[in-house]
Amino acid sequence: MIIKNVEVIAMKAIVIIAQKGFQDTEYEKTTEVLKKGGVQVTVASQTTDIATGKVKAKVTPDIAVSKASVKDYDAVVIIGGPGTDSLAADASVISLVKDARKMGKTVAAICIAPIILAKAGILQGRKATVFSTGRKEIEAGGAIYQLSDVVIDKGVITGSGPEASTKFGEAIVKALKGG
Image (cartoon, rainbow, N blue to C red):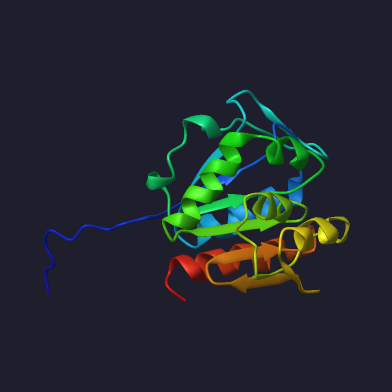
């Protein structure tokens, strides 16, 4: 059988990391799983200058968050780490997350990054997990905290920390494939 004129539509995710202090393991394992799952990954940060991880990773972002259009992606993924506060204070990150949910796109955050989802108002009435130090913040944002590695609730995926990175990435791939 010969098939002609078949357009392959790739799944695309924008993975947002802090300029300084993103969680290395979460970034490395999550992006590895996404790529193995057939997801095209675009890395974003506050600028396109080299971003540095908490431990040793150095990543050159493809795009600044302020230049990204949510229309170009199927998922918005936010990596945690000690630099997450800078992302939570960035209006372009909050706006991208809000726009993604309005458009029905998958939104995912791991470690302390679910506080960004809470700040954006998209955890209201949803089950979510977060690194232990962020529990009060996500609950203040209306989340129903779950003590779990990964929680999926209506297109919003949250992960608890580095140990959950592989499961977190797998949940994103599954969601993008319609599962």
